[in-house]
Image (cartoon, rainbow, N blue to C red):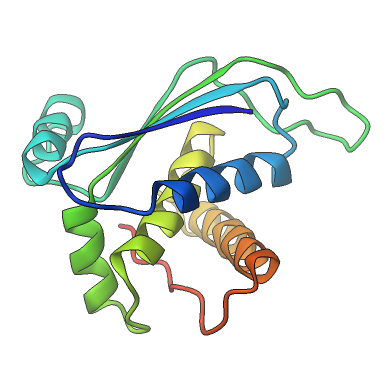
Length: 165
């Protein structure tokens, strides 16, 4: 898996954890090991600009995903996964810090960024949360991936509750 993490935010973030959880999520979703992903961490002003430009919504948001080759997980276990460019995930640590602090199970900015990374990966793979059934599927999968990664890393305590909108 080729994953680039580029922190342009000016905020110190755990880039290794972002890389690790993205790699874990893609492996769990059975995405081809030669596929490529880019994760960009930006400040609130840059995120707001992207949010306005692409979604026509004001204010910064937590995560945005920009798919490239529209890769999807293989339908069956014995199907060969397609290879390609997944696209870009853009994260905003300022929004992540606020969301983590306001979540029912308060957690750190880095824990929120990990959750948002998985959320962004799932969006790149075609998952969405507009409809209640889609939301249940996506957020359930998101929780399973975060929990699995945390267990593999030996991290204790409750996993961050979904805070993405």
